[in-house]
Structure formats: C-alpha cells, structure tokens
Length: 326
Image (cartoon, rainbow, N blue to C red; front, top):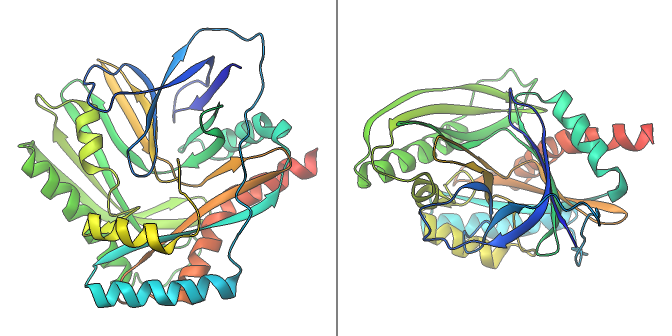
C-alpha cells in the first residue's frame, strides 16, 4: 500500500506526497529528501515520492495498551529520580503515554487545524506500513542550514504559558545542560564561528520553554552528520547521554519509536530538521500521545506529572476541537 507524507514548514506552503518510506543508510552523506529517525537513531527512513495515489489509506500497527495513571507515574518517577541522584546523572527525560478517543479518518482535519493554529510550528502527518501513522506539531528545530550558515536551538525547561513566576534553578540548569552539550559537540567536530543568543522565554502552545539560539558555520560537515552527532540531545535524553538513554530504556514501559526522533527535509541547498515532540500515534479509534519531562536532582514527581499534562494540551485541545466539529 502507498505511504503518505503531509507537512508544513513555518512560512511555507503545505506539501502532500505519496510514495514509500525506505530504510536509509545512516552513513550515506548524500541524502536528499524527507527523512524520519527514531529516538535511538538506529532506524532512519527516507521518503521516495512516486505519485501513486491508487490506494490512499492510513496505516496502523499494534497499539500501546498500557498507560500509567497519575499514581503509577509518580511511583515510577520516584524510582527514576532516585536513580538520577544515585548515579550522578545531571538530567534524564522520563516519558509516558496518554490515550484519547479519535478516529484516524479525521487525521487530515487534525493536521490542517494544527497548521492554522500554530503557524510557527512544524506540523506533519506521516503514514507507512513500517511504522504506522504519526502526527505532530513540534516547536523544536534540530538543525537548519542555508548554504554555509547553520542554526540550531537549545530548548529545555518548561512551565505553563500563563505562569508568571521566575524560572527556577532546576529549569535554568536543564537549559544550560543542553546548550553546553551542543556547543561542546560542535567544538569536537571543529565547527567554527559558534555564536549563541539566550536563554530567553519561548512560547509553544500551552507551555513555554527557555530557549537559546546557536548559529555556526557548517564548513565541510554534512547536515546528516551534525544531526547524528547531537541527536538525541539532552533535551530529549539526558546528560551524560549514554547513561541517561540506558536509564530511560529500563524505566519506560513503552517503546518511544519515532517520539523524540527527528524528521524533516534535507537537500543540497537547504535543510530543516525538527525534533519530534508534541506528537501522537494514530489508530483506528484512538490517538496515543507521547509526553516527556526532564528530571534533575531538584525535580519532584508531582511537578513532572503536571508538566506532561501541560504539554498534552497542544494536541488534546486540537483533538477535542476536531472531534466536536465532527
């Protein structure tokens, strides 16, 4: 059956194509097209359009059946936090899933609703027999390149958009860890002219984050090489990266799959890759949302639960609007 790709880059027109997502060679430097990576960056899919619309369906696979209640999450988070402290991990991201009633037949309506409501976000809908159907509205750019000039952002620390309190040390530290990681990795690659601006508050739907903008000269480096080096960044994994990823693997009850992976377009003239946040996987009669919170030694499980609930509002409010309309 035919795979589908539907996306909107901020300030650009909507792109809708049919074709096939094919497994990509991670070492291939000559990538040209739309690419999708999973969280661990072990699987990448490159989209090959073929304009074959003879069988236009949205694919589904086996759904996640178990979702943590608030009590279960806080119990798991307490164990997770203890491990963070005991192992001396600076930051680690624990995610959970949340289920809501939604018909996959309304997926394109949901995509268009989000595209209009969040014009500054990257909104996408992708479907393949290889990974099912995913939809997202992400505020986080992994890397943008025009000719020799490149840009990325460090986005970490979260609170409700209407929260007027000062940013806490926990939130500031979260942001600092991500920023320093990116700059150190770039320095190891020999990247030149690294400049940063921030951190500053950045609104993203129902929440706001601390954001630092980082620009640099790409030199002889390839876009995919830079993406492979900094992904998964501490914003979605933790620091030290390898320890945090190992802790995540043992703590979470679900596979992240494409959640907190990256996706977007690579070409010889320009590149835009985004971190796959504020996303869900669609099934016949439901959507499963993926929601994460960054833990440091100063975290509390109840606050992290509230953070994930705030993050869910971007999609939950849109799903409710589409369901009510239908």
